[in-house]
Length: 295
Image (tube, rainbow, N blue to C red; front, side):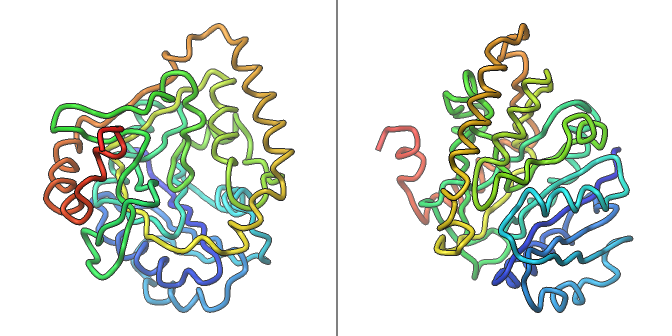
């Protein structure tokens, strides 16, 4: 099984999020070989890490001056990691207990792919966490989710523009893929699109995108009035120009796009479907119908 580094990005005001992220990490059936926390300029985050000293073979804290740049945080984490498998996660993500085991298996099966885990990314859909009942989480992934124990809802964009559905909440790739693609683009400042650009860069290079339902996770709900979000348009012109350039390159590739998109959800689909209907959905009964345009 591929040994994994978990590279967690955090920022000011997210101490409670990080604590719960690490608590969920303690429950993993396949513990990471190392956990590196990269902090975008907060104060007091080291006190959170002190609570988890000795939980993993290597736990490190890397602080840098705040510049609201997720790409720079992730690049720093990858540069400090020692393993062949890299899992990136934001500090507001709660991974299911088998998520890292499934990431390791996916990297064994698809060593040249970028692997994107299921996450609650529909902000308007909330419920209490399965694992921390006092925390409100987003649980519905509008890209793909179980309609039944055997059937998946698939966002139409998976077929013709899968890169637009890349979600940086948590994702993985091998060290060799990281070295092949290079680091994330630090010109993508503030919130948004650095994950889309990275997935698109991979597709242009002929590398598959795996959408990994087995690595499903909750996203801790939070307000979106932070500077990181409110200044998201600051680098918009550059982001749009680069993405359009890469999309044009993708159009000229010989490999059919459908051959580069893999959706994997066999092992955890029935379990998540059960949690949706027994736990999440009773708290917002119309959520799935609204997502599928039935409500």
